[in-house]
Image (cartoon, rainbow, N blue to C red):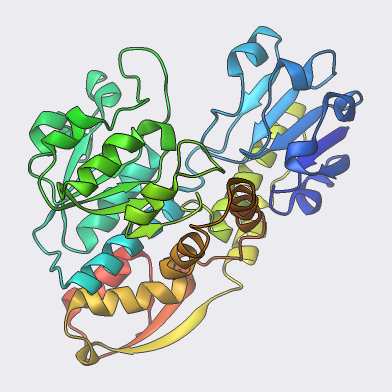
Length: 390
C-alpha cells in the first residue's frame, strides 16, 4: 500500500508506515504526479484536494486530519468514488481551551467578573458542546444557537436551550462563533456575521471567531468596533489567509494565526482519527491506538503550585493557571509584531508560524497543588479539565 501524507500531519510517518510505504511531502507541493502510484492521501487544511490533484490517479482514500473540510471538493470525490473522511471533533477541546483562555485574559485585564454573565455560542457541534461545559464551569450562563440542529428537534440538556439569534444576541455579554463555513442552502454561514447580526449584539460585548474567516464580513466587524458597539474582538481566523486583514488585527484585543485548534493533542487526534478510518476502509489493524494516544499525551504533565489568596479574583487566578497550559499572549504578540510588514512577508510569516507551531498543552496536562482554595474554585478547575492534587 502506498500512502502520501502532508508534512503537517503530526506523526504521520510513525503512524502510517505501519500500513505501507509512507511518503511525506510539503503540504502545498503535493501534485498530481506525486499520486500516480498512491492508494491513500492524508492531508490537513494546507492542501487543496480536488479534480486537479486527483484526476487519473489510483487514490481510493482521502483523509484530512482536521475538522474543517472546505479545502476538499467532496462532491467531485464522491462522484469519482473516492472515499473521504475527516477528523471532526478532534480539535474540540483545543478550541474550547482557546476560547476560555481568551475570555479569562480579557476578564483579568479589564477587571470583569464573569459569574452571571451570558455567553452566546453560535453553532453547537463538537466544539460548541465542549464549550458549553467549559463556559458554565467559569460561571457563565450559556445561550445557544444552531438552526440546523434545532430543525431536527434533538434531545439533550444543551439542545433544549436552542434559541434564535434575535433572542440571544441582545442578551449576550460574549458571542463566540463555532459554525462550519457553508456557502449555500437555507443556513448558509458565509457572511453570517454582518451589520444585521452585529446590530443585534449587546453594546460593549466580547466577540470571538475561531470558525472560518469567511463567516464574518470583516468590514462590518471593523466598523462595529470603530463605533464602539463591540467592546472587544478576538480573531483567530481570517477571510484571506494567510494575507490577513491588518486593520482587523489592529482592532482585535487578541489576534492569532488560525491556531485555536492546534494543541498537540488535537493534531495527534486528527492523525489517529484518519488512521483508524483508514484501517476500517482497507481492513487493516490499529487496535492499540488508545494506548498510543495516551502514552503520547500524558507523558507531558506539568505540576504547578497555586495559592488562591494571592489573586484578587477567580478570573485572575484562573487566567494565571490557564497560561501554564496555553499562553494566548504569545500568539497575539506574534500577530501584532508583524502588522506593518509588506503583504508577501506578512503572509509568509503567518504560514511559517503555523507550520512550526510549538507543542501546546491542553488544560488536562496541568496538575495543580492548590493552597487556600474554596471547594467552588476547585470544582471550576476540575470541570475545565485540570488535575487537582489531593
